[in-house]
Amino acid sequence: MDYKKTLNLPVTKFPMKANLAKREPEQLKSWEECCLYDKIRNASKGREMFILHDGPPYANGNIHIGTALNKILKDIIVRSRQMSGFDAVYVPGWDCHGLPIEHNVDKELGAKKKDISQTDFRRLCRLYAEKYIDIQREEFKRLGVMGEWDNPYLTMNYNYESIIAQECCKFALDNSLFRSKKPIHWCCSCKTALAEAEIEYHDEPSPSIFVKFPLIDDLGIQAFKDKKVNIIIWTTTPWTLPANLAVALHPDFVYAAVEAGDDEVFILAKDLVDSCMKIFGISDFSIITEIESALLEHKRCRHPLYNRES
Image (cartoon, rainbow, N blue to C red; front, side):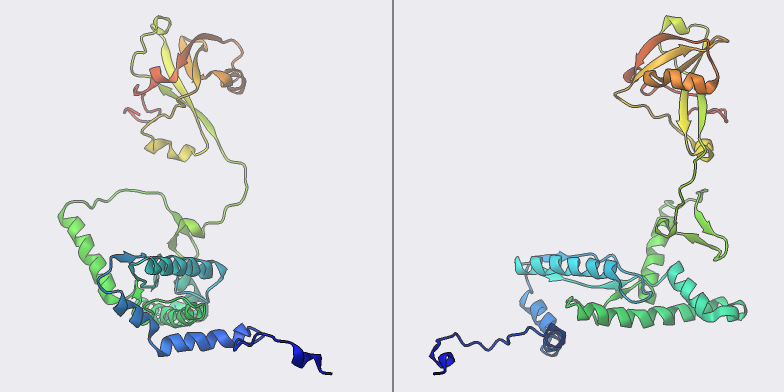
């Protein structure tokens, strides 16, 4: 007897194997052929808008796990808001400017880059960006991310660039633009500024320095009369001292006024007095009084390098 024929098993049209490698492209193709995204937009007209501002990936190379995760999470957010009753538009974009693109075009040119004009170099960067926009667009679509892929925003679009120029002009007309000095990371070989994300740090001993900031305001402490009172600071970035505008104090710390000879008083954290005096090479010292940080708040100091307040 064939016992298989005696079993009353459920019948389904679903295959026993998911076979996603074959089925997913078919599903994505059917979405595209039936214009599913456009139908969702038309059905959502009149609803409250939800717009996710897409921080764009670089138009440089194939997508990686980071860019994939970024787009998938955004797709989840947009879809969830759409299903919650919003008109959730998603306009993807690409960052088409910057060192990564320029660096790769440089590598492709090799020795020829020395003979190419800036105009031609920018044209090649534009072509390079366009190439990877098309590649990444198909890769994101393959992940099932829905959006206005035929109408993305690109930072290299002339209209996009002109709007930036117009807005910058408004700042200029409002006298909101100014020129000043600012330290930046600079690549000597590429001859361009570097973003913070492009900097790789090595663990190295850091230079540090103790600095005396002469106190201008009177604290009203009799023991300080006729003495030079200094607040002691410690910094691992001594090159920032010329731009210093303030001294930071901890609101919960107790500070000590230490007599260090030559009619000089140092104000520093009470718990650090012994270790700091050892570093300073001062063995003959005494704590005059303890000071709450609130008493030092808003008190003015003299800049150690320039004749101004700090």
